[in-house]
Structure formats: structure tokens, C-alpha cells
Image (tube, rainbow, N blue to C red):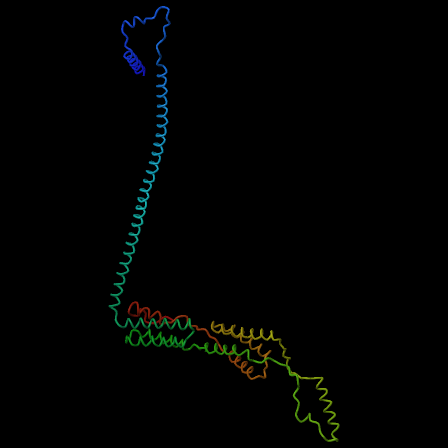
Length: 376
């Protein structure tokens, strides 16, 4: 900076010397005398300070501009870092997903391999069973049919309480065994014969018919007449007529007197308890209770419950006898029907299993009997 100032001062001095050339004579003529005042040369300090101030301003502006540019650069760098982080996370997530998909694919592959192994094993077992069945004789198929018929007979007997159908199915199974023409199966046929005899010995109650009879009584209970008190006593036709003869005045007077008394007083003689009169709402409750008891008897019939069946019917009969008109033909028929239903005996089967079931299973599984006599 000092060198530059010195050079600038020298250049200005040279310019002044050139711009005002003075000869020696002039210089001598213009030399100041001792009495003249010598003026100092003009100073360049102001210009130097102006230049310095300009340089300071330029430096300050450069510093401000540099700071702004630095701040922008920092912002740009932070944005760049954020963008890099986003790109990195975006690149990491697909890698994690790919890793998870790879793990899931491996697990699925392992599961499929296990299922394929099980399927191959099941297929092998099925082929062996098919080969075994192909080697069987027609008698084996007949034994299978007989076993199925015996199982169906058990279902009919124990679940549906139908011994008649069960006996028919057992007979059909015996026919299948007979068609095999194998003397070694004689113990099996004996067992089937015992099962058929045991089923036929069951006293079959007409469950469906009894239930229908109860339905008919339930439907017609509303039409049965209740007890009604007689308001007028029936009178003989001939005894109430007055005679036209004057000589019968005493008789006519007595008849008139009795007719007058009968209009005020009515006397009845009963040998049984008087039937109570019911209000209309009580009649409705009575009919509903009787129907409810009949429905309970019907349910007990299906459940083979002898005690509840008889108790429900007895209570329904008692209410009908007490509150309904016994002289009516429909009421009398209903009571007669209930008496007949009360005599019904509901017997549960005592057969726990069929003796032929075990022997049939042996024939199906092994092709012959393992024991000579069936176990009871």
C-alpha cells in the first residue's frame, strides 16, 4: 500500500512538472525574495483517505456478500445432506423389504416341501390300499355290505327307536353272509340270528300313532262343552195340565200351588260333588293348561319317559272330568281315549350292542374269523 501511494505521488509530481515547464530565467526571475511569503505545496492526504475509505467500503461489501454467500452455501449443504439421508433411507427400505420377502419365500418353500412330502406319503398309502382292495375277493365286498347294514340297524334301534326296521336290516345282513357260501362263517350267522331274535322280542309301542291321537285331542279340546247349571227342572207333560172338571178343583189347586212354588224354589239332589262354574277367562286358562299337559305327555312319549307321560295324561284327564260336561258324547269319548293312552307301556331296549358286530369286523379286516364262537 505504501509503494502504491509513493508511485501515485510521483506520477502527480511529474504531471505538474510537465504541465508547467519553466525556464531557468523565469525561475530565477521568479525566485522569491527574502521579503516574499513562501506557500506550501498542495497535499495528497485527502485523496489517500478517500481511496482508503473506498477500499474499506469495498471490503465491507465483500464481507457482507461473502457472509450471505456462505449462509447460502450452508443452506445448500444442509439441503444436500437431507436429500442424501432421504435417498439412503429410500435405498435401505427396499433392501429390508427384499430381505423380508426372501425370508417369507423361504418359509413358504419349506411349508410347501413339507406338504408335498405328506401328499406323496398319503398317495403312497392310497396306492397300497387300492392294491390291497384289488386283491380282495367278492366275499370281502359282501362282508363290507353286511357290516354297513348292521351299523345302520344299530342306528335305527338306538337313535330312532325303530326295532322293526332294525330287524329288517339285520336280516338283509344275514342274507349277504349267506350268499358268501363260506361254512367257516357259521358262527357269524348264529350271532346274527341271536341279534334278530333279540330285536324282534322288543314290544314296539306305536309312538307315531299315539302322538297323532294326542294331537287330535289337543285340537278338539276347545270344542268340548263345560258344566252348566240347569235353570229349569224338566216337568212331566201330563202332570202339569189342569182338568176342566169342577170336581177336580182340589187337584187343580194343588197343581197350581206346586207350579207357584217351583217358580220360587228349585231343589236338586246330587250324589257327587257339584261342578264349579268358571268365568270366561278361567275357561281359557283351563283349556290352555290341559293342552300344555297333553303336549308334555307327547314330549315324554318321544323321550321314552314312562313316568312323565302317565302323570301328564292323568292330570289332563282329571281336569276334563272335573270341569267338562260328562253327559256329552265328545267328552265321554275323550276320556275313553285318555284311558286307553294311559295303558300304553313305553319300553326302552335292553340291547347294548350286537353280537355280530365284532365278528363282522374280523371278517372285513382279516378275511376270516379269529374266534370260533361269538362272545356275548
